[in-house]
Amino acid sequence: MAIEKNSQVFDVVIVGAGAAGVGVAISLLHAGIDNFQIVDRNGVGSSFESWPAETRFITPSFPSNSIGMLDLNSIAIGVSPAFVMKVEHPTGSEYAQHLKDLSKFFELPVIGNTDITKIEKVNAIFHLTSEKTVLKSKNVIWAAGEYQYPSVNIFEGSELCHHTATIEKYNGMEGDEIIIIGGYESGIDAAYHLAKQSKKVSVFDINSPWEESSSDPSVALSTFSYERMQDSSFKKNVDLYPKTKIKSVNFNGELYEVTTDQGKIFKSKVKPLLASGFEGSHKFLSNLFDFRDDGFPLLNEKDESTILPGMFLCGPLVRHDNHIFCFIYKYRQRFGIVAQAIASSMGLETDEFIAGYRLWGMYLDDLSCCGQECLTC
Image (cartoon, rainbow, N blue to C red; front, side, top):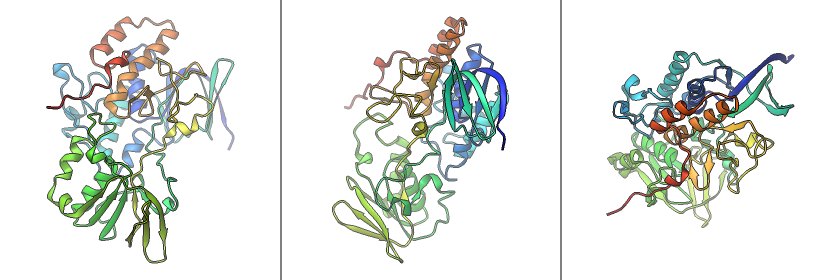
C-alpha cells in the first residue's frame, strides 16, 4: 500500500484518543490552538471499550463543579461524567461513550485506525509515519497510554496465563477454582467478580497491596477495592497470599501448575489470570526520550522530552521525582502545562488560560505540594 504524502503541517499532533489525548486536545483549544490532529490506532476510547464488561472505575464520579471542584473522572473544565451519565463508578464502555460525546461536542479532529509506527524530526518538523500516511507537525504529544500494552513476560510460563486486559467478561468464565497472579486493583477486581459467582479464588502478590499503609492511591488499594473485599462472597471464596513471588507456570497436559519462589505448587484446571499491570506504550519511544532509572521517560518541567524539543508526554506514564500521575485526576493536572508550553512557543497570550486552569486544579506547576500523606489518629 502506497503511503499518502500529506503536505499540511500541524501545530500539534496528538497520538492517542483516550482520556489523555481527548483531554489535552480540549486544553489546546482553550489555549487558542486549533491547528492540531489526533490519531489513534483504533478510535476514541478504544482502550476503555476493551475493559472486562464488569470492571468499573475505582474513582467515584460526583458532579461537584458547582462548588469549584472537578469531578474526579473529568478530563476537562466544565465537564462532569457523573452529571451526564448519572453513574458513580462507570464501566469502561460507558466512559468510552463519554469520551466520544466530548470529541463530538468539541469537534475534535480524530483519525482512527491509524497506528503510528515511526516518529522522527527532520528540520524542526516531526514526521509521524503510519501504514497509510505521513503526518507533519511542529509538536507531538504522546498520549497513547498503557492499557493496550499489558505486561506478560514476567516469569517462566507467563504466556500460559490470561492477562486481565484480554478478558471480555468474568461472568460465565470456565473453572470452579481460579488462580490470580497480582493483587493490585485489577487482581482484586477479578477476584471480586469471580467470588460473586461462588468460584474459589487464590490471589498471589509479590507484595501485599491490601496491607499497604500509604494513602497514595498509586501505591495502596482504592477504597472501592477495600469495600469490595468486605463483601461476604469475597471473604468466603477468596484466599490472599501476600509476599509470594511466582517463579513459573507449567501445563502438564491436564493441569496448570503455579510454582512459588518457595517451591510450593498450586494447581488449576483453567489458565491462571495474570493481573500484572502494563508495560506501557513508552517502550516505543526509545529514540524520542531519555529514560529515568525506573524506565519511564525523563521529562523537563513542561513534560517535554529532554533530548527532543517539541516532543511532549501526557497521561499515566508521566513521572516527576517520586510522583506517579497514573490516574485521570492526577495526570489531567498537567494538561494545562503542556498546552501552555506549546501556545507560548507560538506567541499566544496564555495568562488568562493559566489563571483559569490553575483555578480548577488543571495547572499543577508546583510539585512540592504533592506527596502529602494523610494523618492517622
